[in-house]
Every structure is written in structure tokens, then in C-alpha cells.
Image (tube, rainbow, N blue to C red; front, side, top):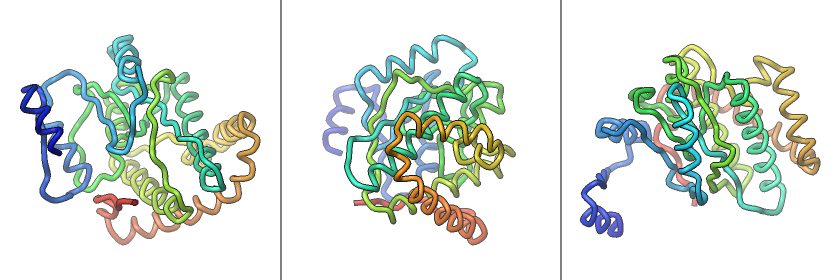
Length: 253
């Protein structure tokens, strides 16, 4: 924090917001959006590390078409060993493959929030308690007539859970957040899991293509199915029990 304050003192363009209490990501983002005066806003998760040239790639993509409302970077994981690492690489590979395919088809209404550049005219304030900010903002931008893109040249390195139980907790929160977006905007985020239910043929083609690129990922398929089933059931229970579940994210060590 002291480093940020020093930077703010040296550059009056830096506006540092400090919260005394964690009220959830949606609340924090709304405070930021309330102060934005520029035509573009970049969101980067606190545990994500943009790779060299990522911002330039996002800006280039945004400049190519004024009807683009959001451009996301492609998340990439650090190399790891064991079942959890293999599982996460498989899940994120399927996610990224889906994003790229929908990007080319120009039908995406979803953006992950690891690193994403938005046009401020395309965004709106987040409803209180929204969990997946990137998914909601992208869905709203799509409803306003903007296209949602992903830049394959922009990469962002992300931290991931280390235990199966943490994977389930994370997926539980994400699926709950996607259900929130579906209820708020009337259409589900187009992700690999929603395509498997709403457009099974497309979803299966994407999964097969993911496995073809990384055959070893077949070993993680049973674990992925078990995790998704457990997370889905838990997220459904969360939906019935509280509309504000997961608003304040649980921290992992």
C-alpha cells in the first residue's frame, strides 16, 4: 500500500481508492466506474499478471472497431504437476478454446475478468451482490449492441487453486455468478458449460477439439465431471438460499 501511495504522490493521474471493509468486488468496481472519465477502462484481477505486450494488444483490438465493447486477454496457467494441475489446464483450455471460437463467430456475450478492456460507453453499474463482474458487464454490453472479443495475442498469467476442494469452491462461485447473470439479463453467458447444455453438439465439438490438442487431458475428464457436478449442485442450493452468496470472495492462501 505504501508503494501505491508513493506513486500517487508522484503522479496526480493516479486515483487510489482504499476500502476499510471488504464489501465485495461489485461494490468496489461501482466506485471505480463512478470516477472514470476516460473512454476506456481496464480491469485486472489482483492475482493476475499481464504478460508483456498484453495491454497494447487489447488496445489494438479495441481500436479496430468502434462497435467492440470489450476485449479480454487469454488466461494462461503456470506449468504444474499432478491431477489438479492437469484438471485446471484442461478446464481452462476448454474455456479459452470456446472463447476463441465464439470470438470468430462474433456471437460471444461473455468475458472472463482476469484482464479485460471495456469501452466505458458499453458498461453499466453492477447490481449489488453480482459475483462475476466480467460476465455481467460483457452481457450488458452485448445487449447494447456491442460485440465481445478476445485477443489471442494478449496473455495474462493467473493463479489457480492447489487442491480439488478449492477447485470445487471456485467453480461453485463461478456457476452461481453465471446463474445471476442469466437472471439479470435474460440470457446465459456463452461458456463451454452453458453450451454443453444449450447447444450440446457445439459444446462437444469444442471439448473434442480441446482433448485433441492435449490428449493427456483425458486423464482429468472424470475428475472434471465430478467437480462440475458437485459445484453445480452446490451453486443451485446457493441460488435458493441467498441472492447474495459469494458476494465477498473467499480468499485462498
